Image (cartoon, rainbow, N blue to C red; front, side):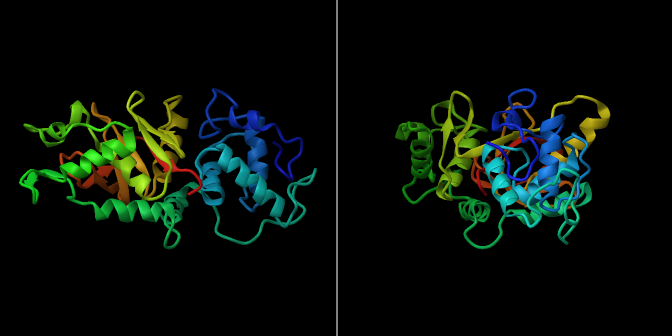
Length: 300
């Protein structure tokens, strides 16, 4: 699929898999990145077309496409926007007209872009995820007794397993409290399962894959950048952290691969969360430096 307005635009497959089979993202380089930068420039990004997908290019992608990587959904949006751009895309010798007025995009303002891009009005997926997560604070708490005299919220936890995994743990498994660990139906930690439930509740078509230990469906998973060189890694890691926004489901460093829903991103390099399996459902406070990846509903 070619992008309207680009010279000799590569195929969709080339754009999506430039190096290692992953969607085009931070650290990638080459002609496919140059084509992407030209397409973003036609929409007013003002990037240097150097074929290097760094923080500024990713910031433009977040601003214009709502995606940190060039997934197929982002590619389709880019094609649609390019077709509507007032310049008609890139001419053979550069711009036909100067970029439209608007805020400049740079590494310095990625954090503001990421923080404000999430809920853009009532009903947005990200805002629904945050609202639904906050609303379930303390809804499941094995350290408290519910109205039925059993651990608070055990029936809700059982239904969450059914809805997200397709399997239903027994009543006994959902009521059994392990000292220091809370409730773990069939031995399963349920921080990610609860987060998956919140995405489902918010209208995202997603399930929990117990074999892979992650969410599958209408979500995009973005992993933290891998170390390549000291100079490139610092910039890539900074852009990755600054792309995290409310409504994302993050995974955190540590042996448990803990999942949490971002509810607020702070200016000091930390963020607020709502977590399952704490051992209850409750708020948390984490460092962006500890995030190993995040899930985001597609098209949000």
